[in-house]
Image 1 (cartoon, rainbow, N blue to C red):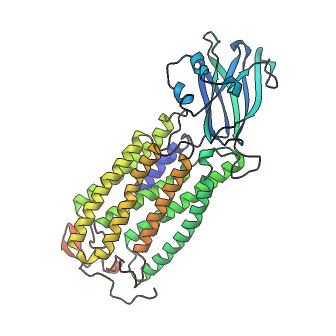
Image 2 (cartoon, rainbow, N blue to C red):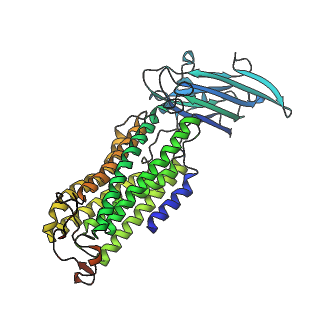
Image 3 (cartoon, rainbow, N blue to C red):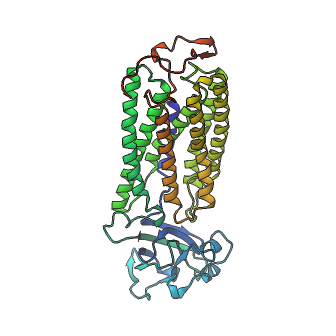
Length: 452
């Protein structure tokens, strides 16, 4: 529990500075000695995507140009993070397609000038739309190629949309994140029913004195996931209405804690804890403690790396980082430990195979799904669908893991996989060495089971 509290606190510290889905409303003050700079990006729907802008700068800077690149390999990837000159970066654009917008008082319908604090300010505002063969990431930059080394000093504000005003499901959403609200709605409903079923089972197990700490850990994991999804639903709903945000990291604290607690549960039960053993060997306890704490540290590093090192000019998933691949590596190492522990428990307690065979298979699928989805997301999915697909896939895996565990531990006479047979008020009655107390070998609870 203390480990989960630590991860929640550390993620909360990073949540204020982590960039989220690229916004709808973007504003800031850019001041740099460079003559070309990136401002914002957004994934627009063809024929529906629109943008509005307001840009202000001192007239002495000359005529600035607003540049609109798209995600074709001949455009943004060809010029971003290269040593090309400002003019060369403009050369890949097509002025006839309005990819270069000149910001000056002479631009029709786009600018006006005025005096503020003895400085002559150029204030430019306009709007535009996008038509392309598919959803595209568009990257907005600004340039002052003829500035003679004066650099850039501009204030800007953008509003980018993918639907008409008042369209809850589309207006403020980038095309890659458009399906996240429906996914969250489905997850909220599914987890509400799942949590109800878990509480019913918990009441039954408690009445029969079989409500072991491993099942309490499972209940905690489901509760954390449910609450995290509710918080995510709230923040995405506010974003759909206002276009400001989203800020999903507070909800991410709870879903991350749910994942960590469920992984801890799998490792403990693989060693037979509360099923075949009253307590674990000291060396096993130390190994699991080190692994979970290391997993927490890497998880926190993942969010910190996203906040500090992710380049906003690139479309990156949360797991496309050294910390993300490190997390995938830890999951693989955890799977090896899980398989070894399950094999040892099955060899020593053959009467528990009705539980441990499906538990090993389903637990392996859940643990390995993280690394597999990370690799698929990075190497296979297109950038304009990656965010929604990854969100849906990870949510489905979390739900499938919790549902499978509920099925394995359903307290019914018909469930031959039911793992618990020693009552909680009999835990002290055990046999074995002091370092690893083993329960008496008995496959199922002998008392009459009330209800199915």
